[in-house]
Image (cartoon, rainbow, N blue to C red; front, side):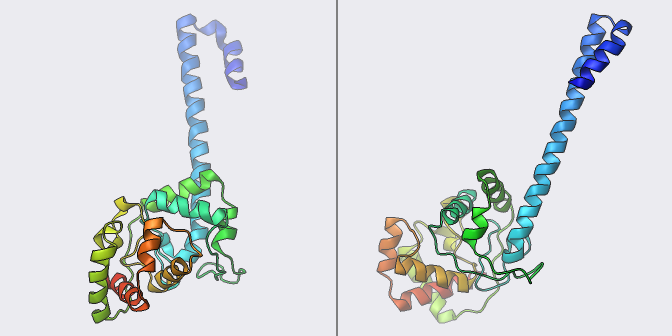
Length: 225
């Protein structure tokens, strides 16, 4: 506005009212555009920095190369943001984990500590950004016989909420097929122990699974490559 007033006072005599109004509108539009571009650049830089922190644990572009760390690329936006809000509220188990890349000399951290540093806007931006990235199925070993048995269990008990082998984003549920096996094993144990919040229907379904059923399901999800 200071620049605009200076322009008006200094050059008022050169323009008639119509010319002056048009010049002012042009100047205001240009100034607003520059401010918007600058703000967007800052936001983009902040998001890139946040994502780099995530990628240092979850892998480049959110695709994990480690059995105990989940891939977060391609998750449904709601699923990702909901998980971060839950972690921020410390309502989900938060095991310490080392950074897998970048500066690996940093002290171990956990998802509750990470999420605690995020604002609502940060969480929503991260969830949107990772949801736009492709989900990549992990290449991992599995037992073929167990995987076949697991597919039958999934089709009967799990497919209604976790369709397409648990990879349908429209279900707004966590990815199962192709997810890292170690992470899935930990998650199933937490669900079975009741230390991780879950919908009532899922709790009922989990409670009906034997240890052999769970192992078969895990191998089936690992086989989805």
